[in-house]
Image 1 (cartoon, rainbow, N blue to C red):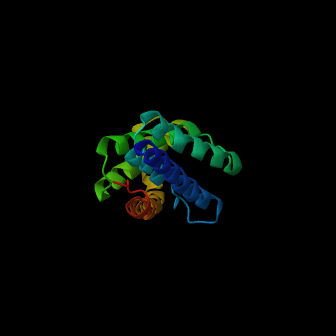
Image 2: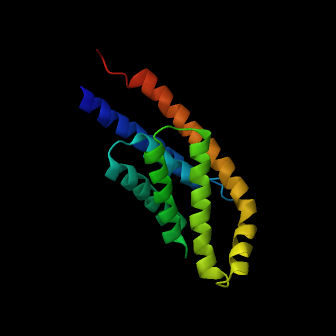
Image 3: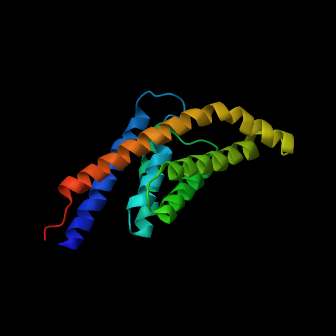
Length: 166
């Protein structure tokens, strides 16, 4: 019975992630996306470590096939994996956990932007991160919104539909 619940749990997690990633395909504010929330959610709730990293990456990769890849895609995926790591280490959703995920994703992806598009000086680095701050606001809003919806939705489903029969 426990393995059935674990399988159902992972299926529900995957469905929630897929639903979230579909919102990338509809018009939205710049950087108001579920990207970081998907990685964090996988890290928080998927117990199998390989699956915790692989499922969010696969889902993102499939959506990127439709949306296109960019010069910083490798940095986006590296940031994505770091956010998943934060989820696996923290193991409990909180405002701090979501903020740490957002901040680490911001640092990693904008480091890539700096490496690929700015002078390799301290001034170039500061300019890159300074110009990225307005986008970070929308990222934070999106991360808190999508993380909240995914976490609350999953907890509701888990409480009402994934309870083990005793």
